[in-house]
Amino acid sequence: MSHTSASPVPPPSPEELAGAWELVSYVSVDEDGAAGEGPLGPRPRGLLIYASDGHMSVSMMRGDEQPPGRAGPAQRFMGYAGTWRLAGRQVVHDVAVSSHGYMAGTRQTRELVLDGGLLTLSGSARAAGGPSQHRVLTWRRAAGGRP
Image 1 (cartoon, rainbow, N blue to C red):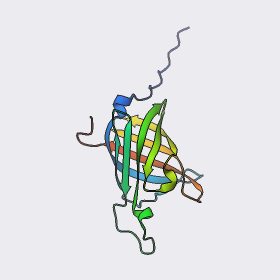
Image 2: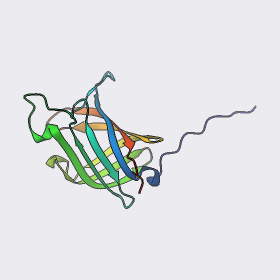
Image 3: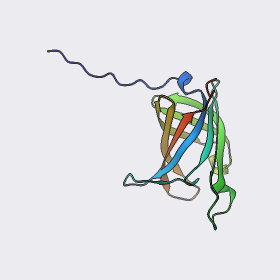
Image 4: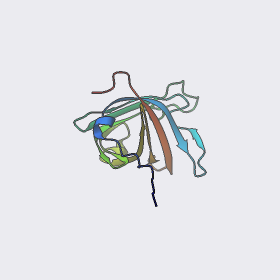
């Protein structure tokens, strides 16, 4: 009896992930799986850089005007830098510095899917004192974004 099955897609290599990525979308997903606006509004902007030497940096901001009553830097900009490594189908960020002080010194682990020029990172995040939220960020390889 002959049996064939599709081979699972191998996890990406560090070389495939290295380079610059532009933010396409940033959404929060509730317990029922419904996606809603993320913390940086409906049109966030961002740049994620994975250096081939293991360093990384991410900067994200609102791409629209902030609604009245939501002033403050925490809602307009988010960013951190540190080191990165792959662990199977996850990318691990060891945060050295951050726009949010509570993140410095933490390890941020994200599920990853690399599909051609699109990178999707997802994971749970907990704002200081707030509930855990599932976030999904989609990135597009930046023009000339390979090292």
